[in-house]
Length: 391
Length: 96
Image (cartoon, rainbow over all chains, first blue to last red; front, side):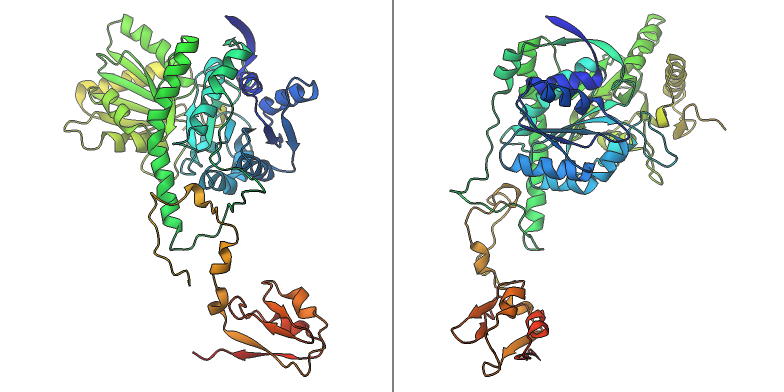
């Protein structure tokens, strides 16, 4: 066991280095991500044999990644915020052409007003782009999931791109201890990518062909099927990774849910704070629990329903707004997952932490108490709570 | 659309719309997109091949002393008629 001090970004870069990635194309503008900055140092120092392509925009970065991935290469890129927004067109092309690219995303707010700090607005705006989306809680998870992401993406039954999402600044720039694997262990776990098709002059193929109304729909249906295969493949990869590392992962993580009457469900680093507060409240005899989703797309509907169906009240934390939508994105999905239960928990949405606004244990405790109150009375005071906004 | 074969379902199509048969686009005849048909007056044609160079669909066929049009693929854009220095190509509305 080797524990190294790393930021979340550095942990991702280190995982990519050990993953023997063939091509990295990136454009690290505002907001900067240290994932590719650190990786470019590995390239400059000759520690990796990766082809590092400097391009003129994030749109070009992902375009280059698509081309490289179609040749059969293992490919990584990283971005955040406006950069992800500029990639938007290419996100759909990467998934539509079935490129198993892995992308690190340090989730940050979108302009305007200009803001470089952490929230989930960027990736939530791309949630229907056909990418598998994983949200991590800390630098260790950023490292572990990046390695696993390649294996999930490249599985023959999946062949889809994966985004590994880490909260901007909170995880991307904070130093933590990360238990890293030996290079040989990662090599054995990941092995080389086995592409279904490659660009070979002796066996010419066409990719990116025009598909008019008589064919397009069928290829979208194929993507749906690939998404449906993800939980099974992810389970297999998690199990194998667990046997190598002793760290167990899944589609979601729970705390105190065996007897919780009031629960919080959230993504990313907030889960750590929520768990700490829940531990304190449970010591006082309050039956509270926390559900953290690792996998957000495909949405693990059955597992979410199974984890939450026994609670009386539920607060769903969204670090992004769905303007004009009934709820934030996560809350809409949770409500859908619980639809059809004979007795559904009382649910309310907590919009929080936008533009990097800090979320304190006292904020979480306040929400837990509101949730316990809703559990006791059966009444939700407000469907959407804007936690910490000034009136 | 002029592809004649029975169309397969999503389960049997190759992933990501990959086409493994080279040159299969030859079977996709785009000539029926045409609203105007280029007609070459071979007496006027001096075989300068401007049309052959400019044609975006490679639908100009070279003969020894003049050019012809491959109507299976010509979409009727009219660039050949526009570029012909001898006005040897006329665009005539297709009759249905």
